[in-house]
Length: 319
Ligand SMILES: *[C@@H]1O[C@H](CO)[C@@H](O)[C@H](O)[C@H]1NC(C)=O
Ligand SMILES: *[C@@H]1O[C@H](CO)[C@@H](O)[C@H](O)[C@H]1NC(C)=O
Ligand SMILES: *[C@@H]1O[C@H](CO)[C@@H](O)[C@H](O)[C@H]1NC(C)=O
Ligand SMILES: *[C@@H]1O[C@H](CO)[C@@H](O)[C@H](O)[C@H]1NC(C)=O
Image (tube, rainbow, N blue to C red; front, side):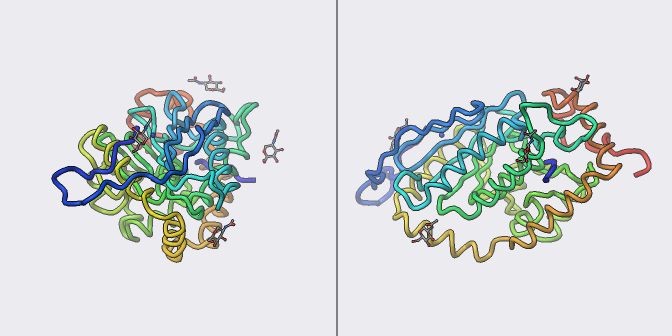
């Protein structure tokens, strides 16, 4: 019961200007094109030991039953294939939508008065988010989020649980849960605190304010900001190729040891429990209904495009 609200490669940049003697080629291991038909919201293309996973769930890349199922089934496959030669070394998640990376969680999964309709399943959407969170953080595969466009709530939780984040000029990262009287429930708090520190995590999670790419890079929310979508893609690909040029065992060992610093399962579970407990309150239910109303059921209109600016519009009077 978890009602949470919530790839084109360039060669390594061994240019003639650099003194590197010989260009390093990608390992010979070749994977077949990965097919993840599902609902068609995630297209994966394999090149050597890198997979490009492109999110495309119109109109706003909502974490709804379709995207939740497609992303979790892809990541579940990686989990099943741990330590086999069918797994990639690096996965890059990007979006086909220039305005949105992943908008946010499907609010119908939160609103008991307007629940997710079949074939969707609100409980399953939450379970898939949590399982994906665990897998991204722990699998011996390096996950890079190539962020451009808006991402809030569950979208940002997904982004901060990837291992590395690069951001393009249209980036807007935020948490909107505060508008619903909720804490982020699927890791947003614990992962963000590790990235930007206690005071800034409080500033942004409490205010529901968004951060652009340059600010996000300055405070550590993302690793780097790039001035154009083209540069973002080029540099993300170059980083992925560089990482993928190194032995798999080292990549896995490094991630495992860095994970000594990752948020504890107990703390992650605590966030989840509190979220779940508060989600059924009158305040949250009213806010969720208001959100669906002002966003016209999460359409690509003014409210969603301006989010989280007008987030206070969903706050129930007197709460
Ligand atoms: C695959 O990677 C190779 C080596 O970096 C690159 O030259 C090629 O363009 C890539 N192919 C595609 C389809 O991305
Ligand atoms: C994968 O291999 C690593 C390193 O040998 C090992 O620590 C880990 O337990 C293995 N994982 C699985 C699921 O087999
Ligand atoms: C929805 O998903 C939950 C959790 O996986 C499952 O227990 C439940 O049976 C599903 N409900 C329906 C109507 O399929
Ligand atoms: C939103 O969806 C609900 C339930 O599916 C429907 O009753 C309502 O008319 C929709 N509102 C808008 C603005 O589309």
